[in-house]
Image 1 (spheres, rainbow, N blue to C red):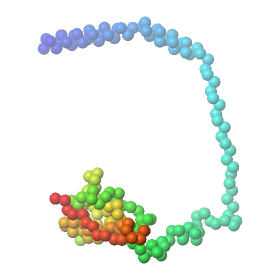
Image 2: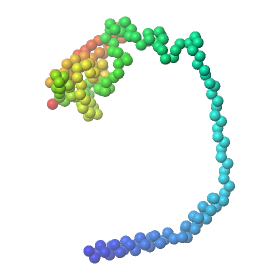
Image 3: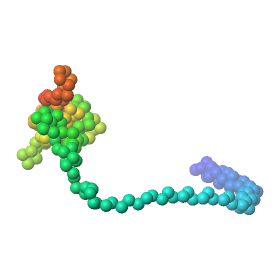
Image 4: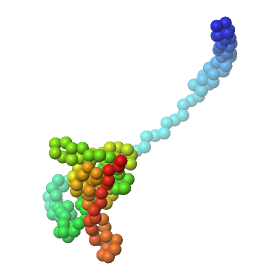
Length: 181
């Protein structure tokens, strides 16, 4: 107890002596420097850059198409080709689902869930996020579409580009993700 009182007294004396060392002597030098800087004439400011004038464009619709209506050429580009309908090529305009960014072997099935006669598969992605999937969802980087969810596995059909034989041919292959125990 006596030692801590002695330490507190010593600390108080040390702080008092340290703070009194910050006297007015150095503060006077600082005030003189500030006064000298204030006496300097100000530097001239750079002129504001000139703004370039942009020519106005007046849209006249005489002889031009309506920019808000789709023309025949744009509509044809959006229509699927008849050759693509008969082949197995994946739809390039379909919005990708979150689990399509991962390789199929990096996904883990951890269980199933049944709700209102709909069976859901529980899949964990490599970043340890649990996802709920059902028949019709897509998994993996090969356009794998879920065809069946069982208690022990999730079956899917992948669409892959054929590397042998004719170039550009697409084919289906069956794949599955087994339940991790």
